[in-house]
Length: 409
Picture 1 (tube, rainbow, N blue to C red):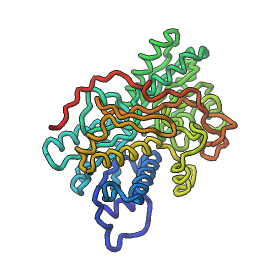
Picture 2 (picture 1 turned 90 degrees about the vertical axis):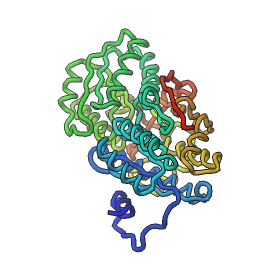
Picture 3 (picture 1 turned 180 degrees about the vertical axis):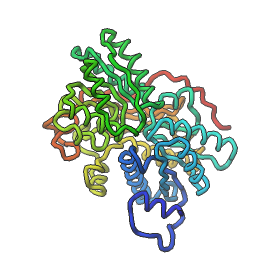
Picture 4 (picture 1 turned 30 degrees about the vertical axis):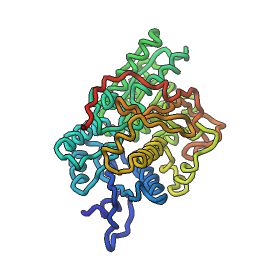
């Protein structure tokens, strides 16, 4: 299967490449789930990245060169991701974009670093838009990795700060996916709740298989039996949707403190049961600013339907910063772009963002929000939308890092 055919199948198109695509100057490999339990999230991200790449190309590209997005389905599997990474490199990719699955991210960042050490002059840069295991910008950091989402600890700090002020929260149940990110969420929750609210009791700390559970009712039964008033979860995609749906079906009355309550389909799944109960921490939501950003409206017009509801504001930040770094470097070479991106600051409609030079972690405003009625912009046509509870400015999200980065000479 050639690259053109693979991209067409991934997007669900039925047209064929008659003469083959025109050769693009800068090839970018998108490696994420396009099938299986994580597909809804992966496909939405794919469309978002393509949208912003098309905008860059329409404006003349970067340094006169156009970008081409090559898509590879990794099924949220680290081993499959390495196979797809090898294919991408063989097809000339110089940039790798990935986000869904920190176990995948850890495999990719290690493979990219080893590739670059072995292939001087053919270096690859890894742009991470969603994998948030703190290790990626701490003990596992490297020069070739840049993260554009807040890490799990940064998000938990924002969540627990809000929880600490809510005296109704007394009994917390932790339920997370059984891999590096889910374990990081659980560890951060235990640590930060003990520091900010030592009176809170953790009544459950559960890990479940990643994107393999079809029925969460047994887990919900445990949550009810434990007498929890609050659930903290880092679940995403199907694991988020099916968990809160099972809670709704069982009549579970808890506050859902989530990382990804805005996952595609989540608001539809919980409906009115989520009003004043479903919460999330994110870098953006539809009511975070007085007006929607023009690109958000344009994305919705290009990709109608609630399954395509815009979710990845950080992708906009990433591509804006990438284009600015390439322009500053006057080059599309990954090393030069990386050096230009280190320490870069940008103003956005939500506040200032900064790419830390010491560990390549983006600092950006974070919002803790609650599903509510009577908001300006609703979600998934439900009549319900997100209302900001608290905003944390980008600089205030910074945490100490153990990163000891070695830079290429």
